[in-house]
Length: 427
Image (cartoon, rainbow, N blue to C red; front, side):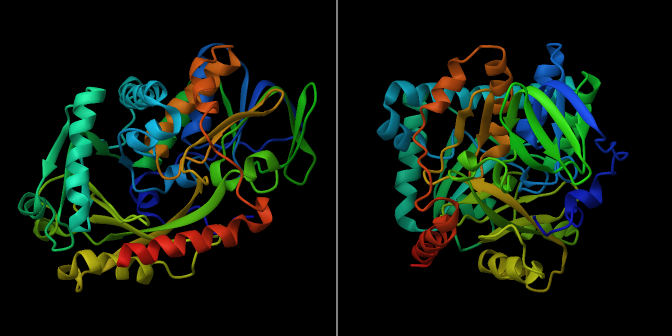
């Protein structure tokens, strides 16, 4: 079982904790049971409950405890792979459909925030920063292709001078500014979606770790150690990298990795020493650095990964090492919060969306793109339960093979691959 505690992040500190939810006792019955109370599971629960479907959500810890409530909060355009790669894999027609899905995801996300009055402090602006000079022309050409082929006019090309006006470092050589991207407080978003789902009639149980899923009619989900269980006609597996032994067909395709984040103390006027505006930043490293200003004037910085669901005992020194590579001028600034989160990645960095058994559907493996895609994919799962399969079938065509060697060998293979790409980042 994942070893890190539910508290300790900046988001925990600035968001008041909701009242505890009830524990599951005995046997519960539902039309749909959902494993995981992150963006995908909560959105699925909300959209199903609004249609009058009986829904139970089972969360092993608390709402937003996994990557949904612990990430960098950045809203990127498109899928995790760029459109050029999707065209090579899927053809132009499907690549266009996937782009439209991602744009629909933005519309849905902003609509959910507005409709349910979720105070997640959304701010516009997202900079892609190139850490190698040879990457800049490619980034500019990609922005132009998005405008010409996909009708996306929001990307501004940044040369070396302009990016250094916006991001006060010598670490970057150019990039793009996406005026339609943005950033938000992900834990506030998760808690807001949970409240909306409950208001619509969904039942959310915390401290409800699914120990075993028994396929059948109905399916049975054995929960905890005291004999509690849920019986449901349909099961949605929405736990991303934190499934741990429940459904091998998902785990073979989705690998958990842990990412590390920290925030500085409030910087006041010194925030302008690192960022000229309020846009978030994500760079071109394979093991990406990402950072953004917080509403209370801190710098939130993410960097470094480990390939386990058990986080290092001391995260702040790890993040500080990466932060100072970008902003050495902050060497005297203290880090006040440091934490990590476990996300799911796939071999191709494309999401794994499938019916893995009759009446058992999953959407997982967002590979860092879950803030944008998770809420929409939850809705797509809800649509699939209702028999509306167009978007689900498109996503099910995405090439996501299992990790070589299954669950036993996927970790050493991924570690070797990530170590290679991390070395390439430094060259």
